[in-house]
Length: 311
Image (cartoon, rainbow, N blue to C red; front, side, top):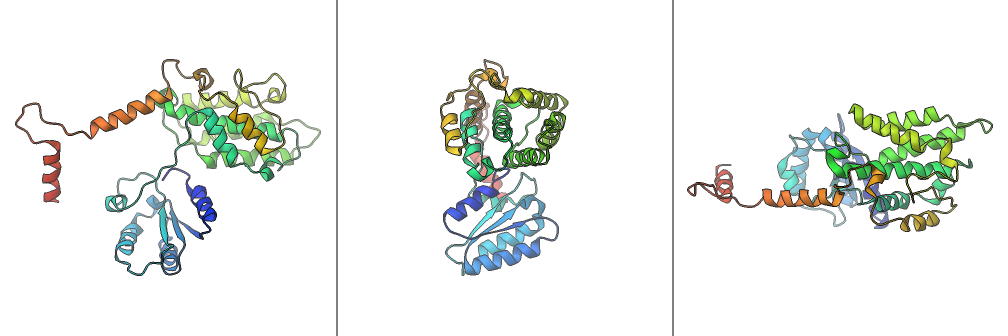
């Protein structure tokens, strides 16, 4: 699964009216995972084991349980989330259905996805007039830095997995900062920029130039100028002033379907669709059968078959 699929799985379970039980794997969590599996196998429900790369010792037992258990409740499903790990059992991967949680293509789609997870209670969480514009600014920053990830090394020198947890943490900080702020004083922008650019999002960034870029985005988009009528992230991308979530979604839907690449500061000759297309074609070519140039060697299929027989 992707880097932050837990909320999506729980939301899907609620929508289907199925109880979902979670265990975050790690040291000493195998006991709890074992009890959870016994309970859900017998009585039904979804079992979600998070971060299984931290509990590799339990995965062999998990595989045996999945294969050998005969009486399984019809509503039982086992979900696991993991990061890439060399020692992760390949057999477990092969017998599983794989899902990945990818960010949508384009700023409009990214903003729409982010605001689809914003409810009216969150929009009304603070009475400060700065709250709604700052919430939108965080959402715009979140979508922009995710969009840059699609340009490979031209977007960020090092690949980063910015996810919904980063957005939630930044929003929670902004909300707390506004709630604790004296109404007679202004927002401490140095604090806001530091927390967002160095901690909430910048905490993932390890490259010095990437960190400089992140802080540049934050310092330009988070200031007293953010609340002025003339402010815009880029030409045609301003901060809407609404009171209802549906109004924000309608505004986002009116944004251009195709982004101006200057908005995410990437070269005009490069587009994310070209990057994605090239990756797909490279993958297709890499799995094609290849004969040796000398004409006397074995095909890739023959080599694989020989290795399989040996194993």
